[in-house]
Image (tube, rainbow, N blue to C red; front, top):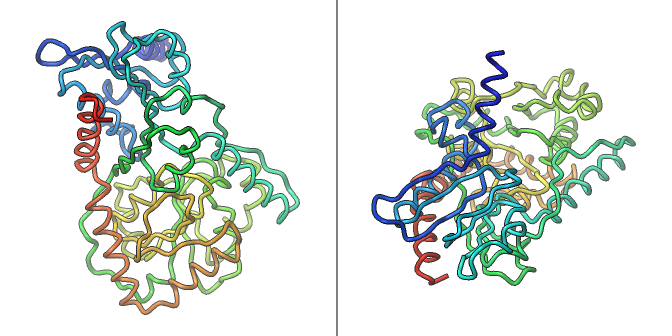
Length: 380
């Protein structure tokens, strides 16, 4: 009974907007369709660890509140909420703008806050990877990361992306201006001392949530099965995807150079130890809006090896995976393993310095505040 009451209370909160009132008389309303729980649970709650969206929605709402607006925040799947009659800015992460557009004032600026690439690219990317697994293995796995179609770009006046130019390009077809506000990081660490890059350059990490094929774990496993002299540590829960786990059980559990660590709290001593002993993270994802797990790894001094679709700025320190092929993953990982240890260290330090400059909570707060100022003053 107590659990049921808690569930009902949580749901009743979600059905009501969370409101941030300005200190002075309001300049009008701002509606944000994203997440409400970070305002209720707080950014220090365990739930707020591990993903960037909790901090980011709070920073967004506070930016408009501080600029003098009354801000209403609802959950992205709230199907009945209507923005206030004086709404000046309406922000949504997927499909609510098209539902709201007939009730919003004519002078309201509509912003699609895109947390990933356009849905059509996203869905097509996963299906293409699943077809590739079918062709390699003779088994058709089910999609895990499909998102419903929406006309958010068409309804929006402006698009914000968290990822880099790859993500931005997926929205340009709509003819709307697209602004990048680089994704933040849920974690920051001091540069790890006492690292021996000689053995570490032969140890690689994969970290991801759900959607194993979408995020390229299949490619990493198949690649390291052919590289017994290199090591791969897998941090995630592939067992939650039964068909994937059945297909890759032997590689995950019975291959000497592949270790399944399981789910990893990236603030834990376990992760600090992995960062100390592993030089690179391999992440051949099919589509991201700025891969948060890779950004977190870079904050621990780990070198990124990524596909373009991971939406990570590799600059001159990271190593690209040139295609969604096992051979491409092997080539990229081999290139790191064959580098002099001193070069790997220099690259890892450059990756660390980059995220400390671009991907932090404070930098996101600053960048989004500048964007909000430009929107509310009519510059954008």
